[in-house]
Image 1 (spheres, rainbow over the protein chains, first blue to last red):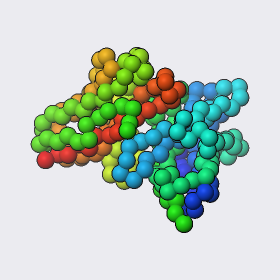
Image 2 (image 1 turned 90 degrees about the horizontal axis):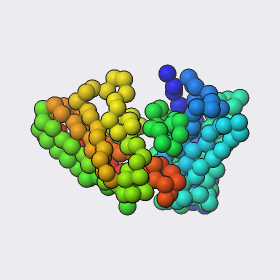
Image 3 (image 1 turned 120 degrees about the horizontal axis):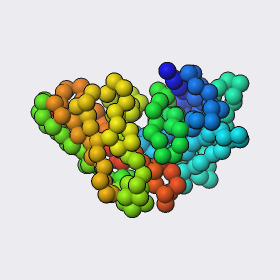
Image 4 (image 1 turned 90 degrees about the vertical axis):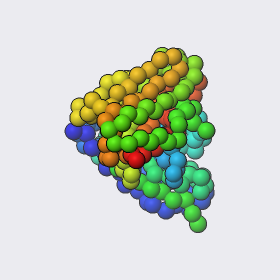
Length: 122
Length: 111
């Protein structure tokens, strides 16, 4: 059974960086049959896919157009975790951030982290 | 404005049937990409409910069913129960955006 455990600060100041971590158990982040996405949900809003990272002989990243210039992903295989960094944040980036597993961009997200509420405020 | 359009809310009495539509375009559902559905109970992470248009993961009751036709997909819930009260989201791939997209979500209320 795959489990994703998220961590990170709940409050970030405008113009700074959101940094979140997702520790995976029950699967390997470097599995060539898995992909790891980040998805967010602004208060009382719907879900927004931010992008994904995956390993296929090397690491690849796909980023959503809406955040492409501000976002980056990384992986630490020794800790079996993935991380998200979102730069130059504004209050519009306030949301619950989720990590989730999906094999490809065409397959569903079958396991989700518990979510981390990040508030951008001074 | 979401790429996939869902009704904001639907409601019905216990035991009744509700359907939730998910309307896309020729760059996503109409292009043949599969549709997946998620249930989000209040205060929790989304949970996969239907995958690849009409398949249920293990443990999901057969009261939930999905279908897809043309540029749209639908989720049906029969024998509505109180604990079906939740938000439901459709999701697929969009080739114009080169990424996953979600519907805006539909809140199901059991009267």
